[in-house]
Image 1 (tube, one colour):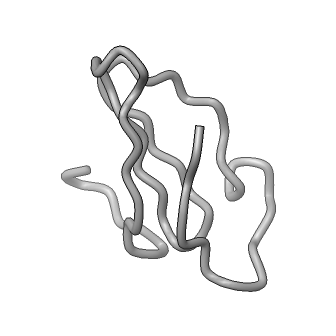
Image 2 (cartoon, helix red, strand yellow):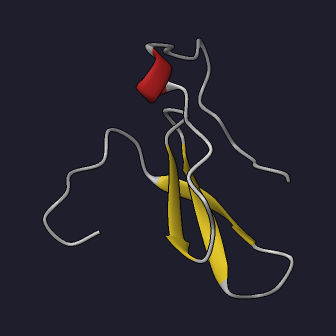
Length: 59
């Protein structure tokens, strides 16, 4: 995430089933995909701002 400012801190990490990637979840609903994890969307990417901070992620 070098060179990118986050709107909220990362609060959760979930590995892919095959262990080849992972997703990070931020309090603003942002989801960041790394390695073999596909980007499936995030709240800010669809224009949604949560009323409360996001605190967990599941797949």
